[in-house]
Length: 287
Image (cartoon, rainbow, N blue to C red):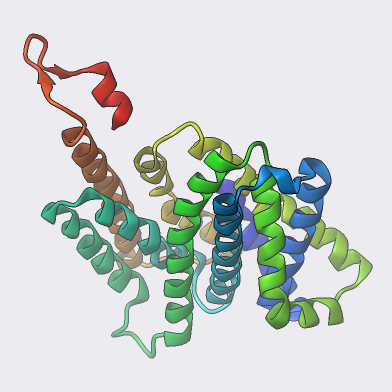
């Protein structure tokens, strides 16, 4: 999370020369090239289902990356991330299958209203729309990353999906990136590509192979707060008291949604052991 938001904040100085989408595409292309050289995915590693999931993952990654960076160009970093977080929050609410789960998206929506302050001036509807598009991409990215990570060994799935994401984004972002590119910007873009997407995507794949999606999502709920702090420290984007409260509401909603989803999964896992008042080890493993 720190790596993603640090990379997003530091990428803003490339916007004038490469455009926001162009800077993101450059980072995707560098990261895909590095991972392809390191992982060297082979066609035999991909079943038909894995190949389909990898292509879908690449499409979601490209959508999320392009929409998010364009949102960051229009909105404060913390605001863009808080709106984007509605994606994984929605995944958690859907997976909970409980009426109480609807409380958390409502709470997060109130937080987003506090962050965007639509009653002050004219809200940037394009930026908000792009952040919501990134939210949809993030939701699909999380679900598909876990699926592809289970089907494709090593880093082959991530390498292939980043290659697809680079190709998907190329029609809208490659031309401005290449037109404004200089040797210095190429070096800077390559360095930023390590921060995002190379390092975080590899770490997220490793985490999702070891954690449930609910536990992973609980930790991810901290991301809007991290983004707000880095926006303040690096971009001088000081939130108002209401905006800070909005971030806190989104973080609280994310944690609550993931706990509700985890409780629902545990409830469906099996009966409680009457002697100890605990579920069996097998039930916990299933949950």
